[in-house]
Image (cartoon, rainbow, N blue to C red; front, side):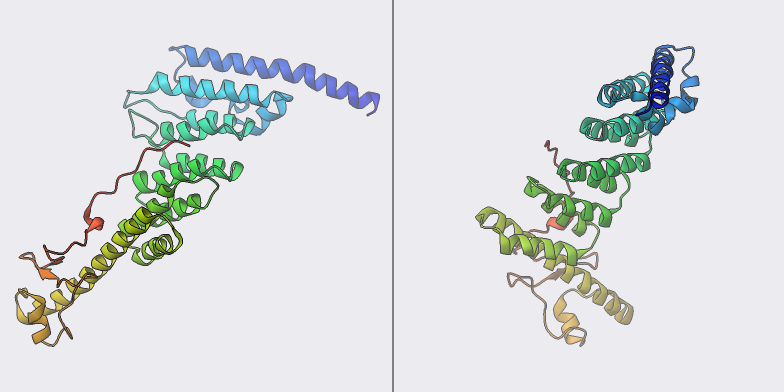
Length: 304
């Protein structure tokens, strides 16, 4: 390196480092001052630019990442509970923290909670939470727990069941991922009426697992899926029957007699389906098949 280059590097360091800490000090004052709380909504470029802060860090990336993550937590904590507050600087603070330290898993996980919670509890920005966790997955491809968080966002916040099922399935293939990730993929697909995807996942579990309990569970779900699919098909035929005859059929036998079914349909155990007073098909009360699809889907609380 030439003398001129060294001098230039030294000059940048002498100017850049003080500027960086001046900027951090300014951020601290803004965070701690009630009088300037509105100013925090419009942080200057230095405090909003991850690439610029990273250049100014001069190798202290992890240290600054912790500082920005701490500031994000404080910023969130000072505003929680106020339905009229804004969290405009929360996203940039989290973006800077995770750019400085892409392995800062806690920032992705809890940052997504801060961003996705509804107003008064959080920023109400599930879209930004999704972007943050996707950034984390790209930087930490083996961290299945981030797929779990992203699947939760798609399922619970955005009601995008196909995307949630896809994310859970991808996470289930990662190292040390628990079985619940694959199960969530199948159940969420079932919730979104993507029965074929759900069936394929449960069938794979049944055929590949040596655990008797897992195989038993997979078979139970496969039977429930068949019942769900059968009932959807029967309900369509019941509607046709009702339009034709002006009333609900009281049994599937009536639809056979009307030439709308070749035989009385039965579930995977052999019990005939019944038709309720609501004009919908149902599993026979005596059937051991469990209609899991009708039960509310619970998202388990798990830790890596």
